[in-house]
Amino acid sequence: MGNNRNYSNHRRSNSRKRRKKKTSNALYKVVAGVVGVSIVALIALIIVYAFSNSNVGVKTPGTISEIKMLKTYEAAVTPAEWAMLEENVPMEVSQNVQIMMIGDMLMHLNVTESGFKEDGTKNYDHLFQRILPDIQAADIRIVNEEIVFAGEDMGFSGYPMFNTAEEVGDAEANAGFNVILHATNHTMDKWKKGLLNTINFWKKYPDIKVLGVNETKEQQEEITVIEKNGMKIALLNYTYGLNGMPQPDDMPFAVNLIDEDLMDRNIKKAHEVADFVVVLMHWGNEYQLYASSEQKNWCNWLLERDVDLVIGAHPHVIQPIEWYTDPNDGDEMLVYYSLGNYVTGTRAARAGVYEQAVGGMAKVELTRNSKGEVVISRYGVEPLVANIGRSGYGNIYTCPLSEYTEEERKNTILAANDPTFTIENCENLCEKVWGDLYTRGERDTWITREY
Image 1 (cartoon, rainbow, N blue to C red):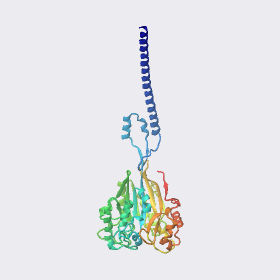
Image 2: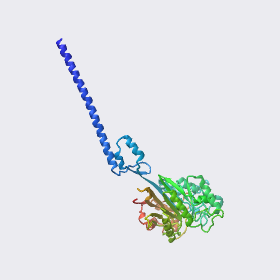
Image 3: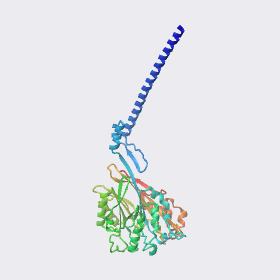
Image 4: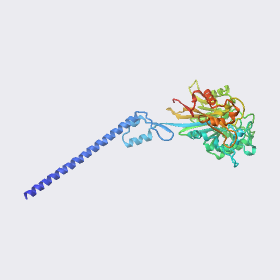
């Protein structure tokens, strides 16, 4: 019996030890858990403090390039406080909008014929195939459609009274252009019928903005605005004249001419409805590699009206890119005087005519600065060359100068007609006109600005 009591006492003693051990383990776990949570909370507070006291950029998908955390976030501790801050505290958001534009679609008859297929159909996708990445990378994609789509029944024609196939417009839409400029000196080449046929053609592409031509006076007073990434960009288009052709008697508003009263009204309205104003001018002297005094006078006039960006066309050769600064308030305006031809079919036989085959693609990036203003953050230009082949479907096209090969060059009409047409001379021309904005061998050159 004694041995049994000793055994029972021993068992109770062990049981009490086990209970004490379990209690001790449980207490340890509770303490460890509290310490662990405290450490995690401390680390979280340190991270929050570090972020709130820095301008660390948080990269996000899409066009939002930077979000800067505000210092007020260090005051947030509980989930409820964080939620309140997320709802009510503004965040600095830097967004970008890309604008690109190509120059004159100078559709000589051989360029129109380059889209004729053996089965009798027409297609001009080849004109843009080599620049599709550039088009698709931009938000606002502009082409200067020099020529009307008057209809095949009026006969396709080249210089001096142009008419090209409406399938050219289909190719522009297929390539992704969303802004078409039609205020040019050739808009009335096929009279009122050609103009109306062109306007009616574009109605099948309601998402494309067509500038410079109007069916009504009310349309002429409307301002085209494209809103993207929280920015509103106004676009206006005018031409110096119509090669002596009159506007229709019953449509004196049909084509936007460079006119102080009209432009002044439009620009004032544009400032009321947009953050950034772009004026697209058809102006200048043909085949002149520098801006005329008249172009510069208009630039000063536009600068006085706080226009932000001017891109020009018509001279059929490239011209310089220049900044204008208002001496009174310091406002700036970027000007591309002329982008030259995007495509051409010139067959002239003389030295130097190759200059008409060298064009430029304007590239401009917009963002909002710390004051909330929409400004130019980067700008550049991409040199292009029109390859004027001899004959056959797709024989004429345009490509980046950086990709142009000697094999392509030597099989062109220009190579036979102009002894100065070499790739090196094309590069020399770009260097002469654009200076630091051109880098040999590079597809494009960008200049970044502080804003």
